[in-house]
Image (cartoon, rainbow over all chains, first blue to last red; front, side, top):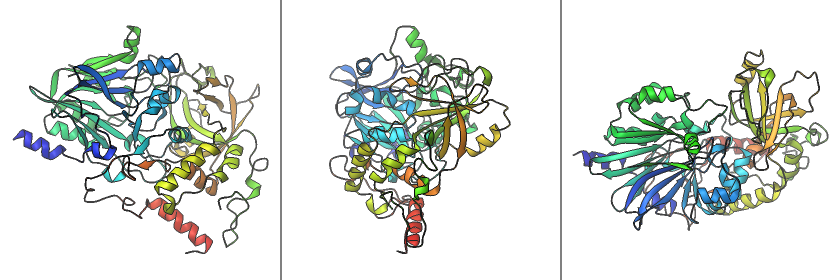
Length: 295
Length: 242
């Protein structure tokens, strides 16, 4: 019965057909996510089991500003490889979510799928330089868009708010971008890793739907790099009441020192007292270039 | 309307008046800027827009930073006539491709720096700035050399691509609303209108799935966002077409 409810609630248009690519077609199972140390910003690869090995199959964001670890373009390409033609999705157009792509080269050859938003002149000119870039059609705003693997694992994406046109004022790009969830159908039921970008958790319907369907929470890449602002009662309720895996993890993607004071560890610690917490800055201090969160 | 020459749209309105052009109303150091964020930041370890350290000793521990990116007004005025306005009738695959080519050509040599200006927490002008300056909006600012006893707000310009930072602050001379027609052109040009929707033409996606029951305004073929519709109606009214 639960499986039927899950299928009904989370069914949505196939993102494969919308995007024209099927990043999970040759994936035997989704393995988790890789959160790269990029300094202040985000860059996340979804990992899949492909031909007996773990490989990145979809990239979400390619950012990093303050505290960037990269020495030169070759260093970027080597640390965060994106095969030509692989799908690269943007959560939103804030510069700390895409700017490393401008400095490197491999990400520019990816197949970009992005939200249509009001954005900066720098973002506009960068996007104009990309050969293969498309926007998620606005008709799908608020709908769960789905990539499916042959074994039933899946990725859900949602453009959480509408684009009101280039002349609309006061658009908050954190609330009109893309949220993502990676779901594995494990032996003990479905488990999810949440990738909200900078969007508050409760703004993404796919998250609330997953929680309602008792898909257990495997982990979170903290929204807005662990910011303590823009928390709502709904967000706190969602996180505290969500059934969780043991263990479950929270990753903060931010630089060791940053002008914003990210992350707010106390906020997450209070809401998720049994979680394991990780910071990309600490990974760097330990000689690592990324943190993997696996199912 | 699109050439940058003096325009009167049938009723004597001069939306693109020579008086506004570079060297007259606009001077070197004038920028049109898109505000990306305004928030309190930690002064310790603060980096400038070019990702080099800056010092704001006089600003206290938690100054407010208004971070924008923009273009020198003169550069924009020279480039804008080379980018055709893309109204609703122009939002086609061909129109989008043409817009992309025009963007790359018109702005290939125009720097687009990040511009930060700072104000001390508790400054009497902070409430005004917090209320007025909204992320996602455009402003016209004047940036000038900073004198030794200058008490105007410090401004840093820089570019993270090149690491080129102006390590010494300049001063914010003024903050103004962008004149309406220039804002129209800024918002139209610096938009994502050059990017096709997935499935808008063959080769990227098929969109074989049906649309939701209640599509948003502007999502049906031939229909555009309400703000754009209003703009077009307004222009047609002014030009006597309506």
